[in-house]
Image (cartoon, rainbow, N blue to C red; front, side, top):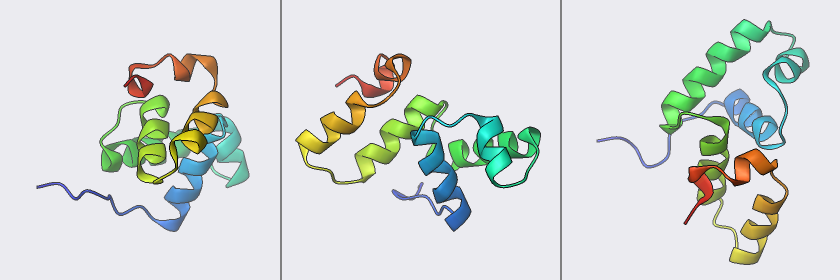
Length: 92
């Protein structure tokens, strides 16, 4: 049985936050002085741990875990790139 809350390292939590901000893989890699290929591997591991398949799903997963009041959740979703908001991950 999979754990309800995956064990993400401190660095992985930081990466999730940067993904949610809309940072590209190259931008995140540059911030951590890593190659983009290494960052892709880290992102794949985060996706696997969170059981998601895309950045949009990762963002939706993270927002669902935050226990945000509905108004704050809607505000967060409104700030996401339009292509992410239209993703099935955000549809009720």
